[in-house]
Amino acid sequence: MNGTKKKTIIAAILALSVALSAGAYEYVKNEYVKKQAEEEAALLAQQEAEKLAAEQEAARQAEEEREKKGYGDNPLTGLVIADSALGKRPVAIMVENSESARPQWGMDDENYSPDIIMEGEVESGITRTLWIYADYAALPEQIGPVRSARPPYIRFSELFDAFYIHWGQSETLGSYIGADDVLVEDGVDNINQLDYKSSVEFFTRSNERNVGLEHTGVILGKNLPQVIEDYGYRTAVDKNKCTTFTFYDDETRVSDTDCNEIIIDVSPRSWTKHWTYSEEDGLYHTDDFKNNLTRKNIIVMYDETQYITKPRASFSYCNYALGGGEGKYATQGSVIDISWNVEDGKLVFRDTDGQIIKLNHGKTYIAWISANNGGNIEIK
Image 1 (cartoon, helix red, strand yellow):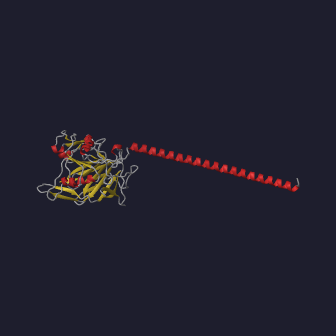
Image 2 (cartoon, one colour):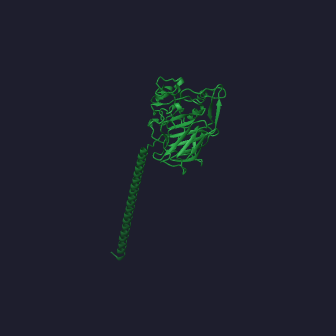
Image 3 (cartoon, one colour):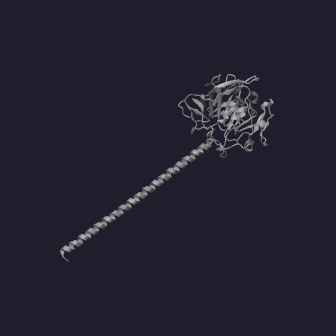
């Protein structure tokens, strides 16, 4: 083999060695990169799994804490409500509030106190209350005294797409437009003792008190679901016509302004209502209904009122404009100024910045008071 050929072979061998070495390097390099990517992917997957597990645990603990506090999906209170009641219409019940009517049956029921109690004037300084329940299948054994319908109360119930329960109604005469016409004109799904249609026992009288007959009418709450079924009324709520509330995540003071006592006069002619805040349970208390009624939230609505006297009547009916106005919201021993209005058929409360207010979880008392005929509140 001559020298030239020998050099060529050696050069070829060296070139092959270099090529093999480069290929081996690339292979090792690629394997390393692949392993690094797999390790990074595994680490990322582990981190994501740990994050998801932490979020699930936090959600579980939050839900457990909510359950301990009694928080739930009730659209009126933010408290627990039966799954079967979700998406169903509320019920509104017209309940008397004269001296002989107190204490009202079912008002301070340990399990089934109303979600909302609204109080306003009906006539001659007399106030009545409207009790609203989000779950019409969860009522006290007895509710009452149930009394006759008035136009403002009917219209207030319509803001919640509620069934309306009453024992009679005011009638149109002269310039006064009565509840009888409003029920018909507005197409209100109502249950009236005077033309009761179901065979199920529902309206009855309780004679346990020595009071006049008009103060003894009650309803048997447990039978309402069957009554509604017998009447064939729509049970699914129309969300476009039903007022609901939003709630804080935890108990919240709404301002630095203390509100430990609220004194309310719906009108100068009506009785005075005193609410006192208790730091022990975070609730407002009153014994003015001759019971220990408690509420988490107190809302005051100022509204224009008008007194109308029917021919041959010795008193004047009080009508509310339901036109919006100013008000107050008290909770957790604090208070803020609010405004209220009816927007798209629903009741809306806003703060002074125009934002829809949140409520604390719990039940609410609403005082509907006269803005132009002397309604007044005092806060201490």
